[in-house]
Image (cartoon, rainbow, N blue to C red; front, top):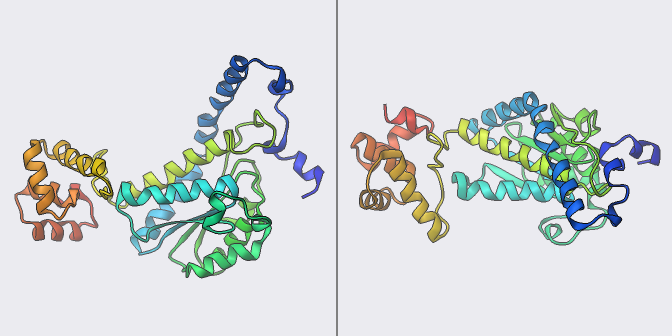
Length: 298
């Protein structure tokens, strides 16, 4: 990428408020960072129409047995991996959400030289995932020009999968390779080019919206309760019981008993309590209603 092209990227421009960053007091520096961070939610708000399109595509994919596959390099890729990893305990997912990082899992802690510049690697990682037309690939690139991501998006579209891009520059290059281009502009970074700052926050908010809204549409939520939570530790076991209590207005003893009877499945326990049915009947009700508790208890 030439210097001229870099100059056109918001993420590469210098922030006029911080030209003397190294002379500011700690308090002054933190105040400016906080002021700049306030621009992030509004920048994301402007992209809600495109985020909604992406969510609808993801819901459609999940309902047909497809997956949401995040892919990116550096901070962008790490954020995708984090969001995908959190979906398992939060929503009880198994195969549904995947995070790919340029350079592989080891790149999460230590950068792999040249990985993000390899478009063919982006394609190969999706080939290794046995990508199908049912899947949605979400390429994340703060700069909006990462070859690894572009290679993945191009391959996704070539086989009929839906390609979504997330970038922190308008009219991004990755957006030209996507079916749905989510682009935000929160202004130059406090520290020039350090896209782990505002750009990273933008991406985190967008990924939160994509996964959470999609899981709501996939039947993983009842009210505002994560009824498909997978209890991977003692804290989540207790949270599961509290979820049952809040959903059914039962006492702790009842919630604990039904949690055990349900096979440690809050969603099943809730349907059992609210309808008075057996575990098998609750499971059948849920299966007949695509996992939605509200429909299963009617």
